[in-house]
Image 1 (cartoon, rainbow, N blue to C red):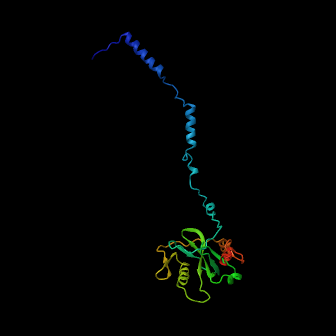
Image 2: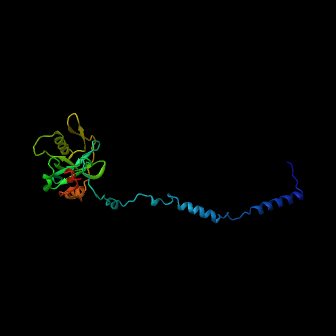
Length: 233
């Protein structure tokens, strides 16, 4: 075994080295304090973090209050079904209304005509069923004007097939497609088992007609539509 001898200088250097190391990093030195500027930046970042408070993004469990939200209808369209949309017709005679309508050939707007003025529009007004409908494309109901046989009683395949399609649509979702070569409408019933529509229970037929024709009711001889027919404008 080899004996290593240390002289006094080595001992002193070792002592001085240990004291310098101790003075450089004291054993019980506290952790470095974060500067105030860094704290403010970190706090600001947390306040703008959208995921810092997950409760603010969580789906509410108060489903009852959400279910009470319902659309408010301010107008009801009067139109034919689009060939690419599936529709349903609300069953019940109370959801059909028989009247006379006039369709403007330029704007394609449909007007209701009061009975006192039917004779003022010979050949222009048409006896019409207004049927309450809904489309899968929109929760807003609409009125489908289906022409009735005229005073001459002559059959019309377009009118007859539209009415037959409307009867089938009381029980089935379907598309109403015009077949030009056959001269009639052909119903295309949906292949899937689609859920029944949700009809607005707070609207009566009178409400639907009021919203549909509030600005489209021909009720006097000075109505702009009648004046155009007489060539006055």
